[in-house]
Length: 284
Image 1 (cartoon, rainbow, N blue to C red):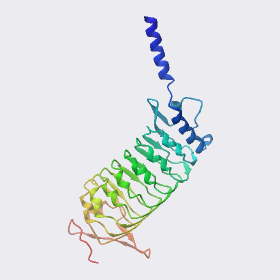
Image 2: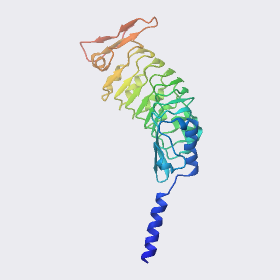
Image 3: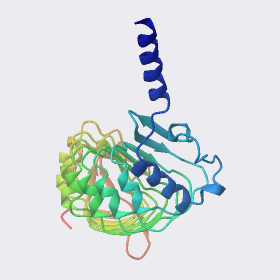
Image 4: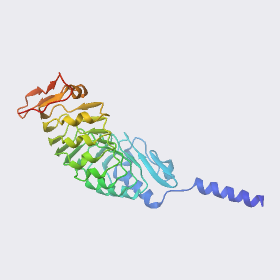
């Protein structure tokens, strides 16, 4: 009996030790390795070793749940096979040399919570397919060469807390659905080419703590009900074409003293109402 129990225990631990992810997931990782010149990575993978020993790969219950290859000299383009990592929760490729577009197939990663492709050389648009990943909490795409308008369906990301897209070439109006993301804490859209007005619906972003819109082409009156955002601790809307008056309360939150640039590249500062807390809309 003792021998039987010893055998079963030994078998169990041996099976656990050598447990491996599925071939489908392993091949997806191998595709990533080959597509991004794995032989030139700073820390390389030994493809003959178990996946759970590969640098930056986290495996739980034989499923790949996280990839962190930040600052690891990845180059090339991202493969569509990443969509086969169905349990992936975090994909961090920060500060590499990845080119091409964001694969639309990433919209199939229904468990993804954190996506960080910032500080790369990505081009193309923000794929609308990403807005189907309602589990997303953080999207970091700053410091790339992404273009086009944000998808009108971005408001479907109802769990999103951080949207960081600064230093790209995004353009067009901010989608109205964006203002429906009540979980949003950080909205960083600065240094792009966004235009149009900042909607009064911005007051729906009740969790917002940081708002950065500076260095765009936005215009119109600064919404008075920005003041309703009680969690807003820092704001930078400078170097746009906003006009009118703002309150002393909002002026204190702006980091660049509300400097605006008109169509002739002439800089001016928005007037601040100093004798009252509430701003008054300009009659002009």
